[in-house]
Length: 123
Image (cartoon, rainbow, N blue to C red; front, side, top):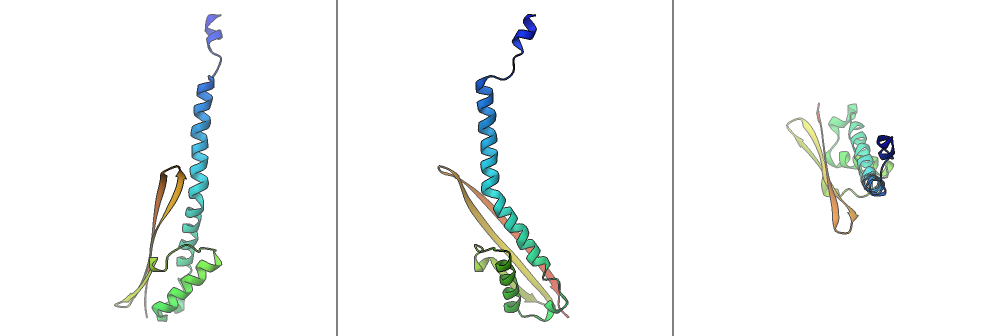
């Protein structure tokens, strides 16, 4: 009978710990998820560059296509210098490299870094 009396469940301190850890996980998700969704949209914009006429496009035209893709997907806070388009030796190479800093609590920040590479052969 004594054994059953001791098994009553979690204490108030235990529940408080669970809520604090769960709340922190929810906070992190709400702060970082939009950046990962934007990153997936950027990957789709680069995938949409796989077109037959892209090999004859100039680097500025490719930048314009990427910029329009960003506008369509409501991606506004990627710096212009994060997108690099190079044409070398019959290959068009696009590199998008950027980082995001997100404030969590007090003086705690999270730094997220993203990099995408895309290339194709020109005709």
